[in-house]
Length: 95
Ligand code: HEC
Image (cartoon, rainbow, N blue to C red; front, side, top):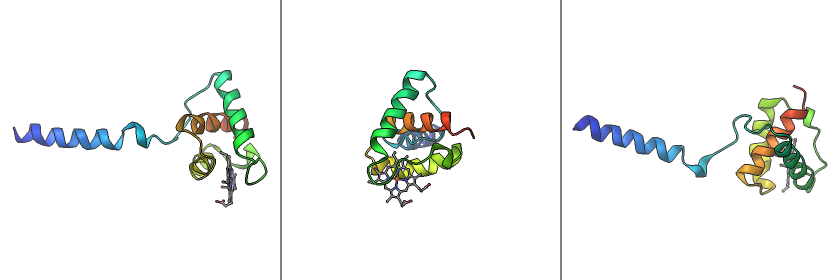
């Protein structure tokens, strides 16, 4: 019985930490040309409001995870837009 309760606690803690609210972009997800094109559009429309559009080659795949996690909230991107912009950037950064 103790094991069962402990298991339930561990389980629910896991579910909270992995709930839909906390999805962050940690790697590639989309690869269809349609989604990459959408990512490009979001990038071109949302990322030049405060500064010039950055060069996608500025960062490697890991670098964009970090930079986008700071910039996506500034650009008020949804999680999905954040993901599509990331996938677009790493599809063209040639790194
Ligand atoms: C609300 C304003 C704003 C928006 C929108 C915005 N940025 Fe930025 N960005 C900044 C500011 C301010 C800096 C400089 C300070 C810093 O680096 O945090 C910056 C710096 C950067 C840098 C240079 C620093 C680095 O880590 O290389 C890159 C690249 C960048 N932004 C990419 C983006 C991308 C991609 C988007 C679209 C998702 C975006 N930004 C949208 C304000 C914004």
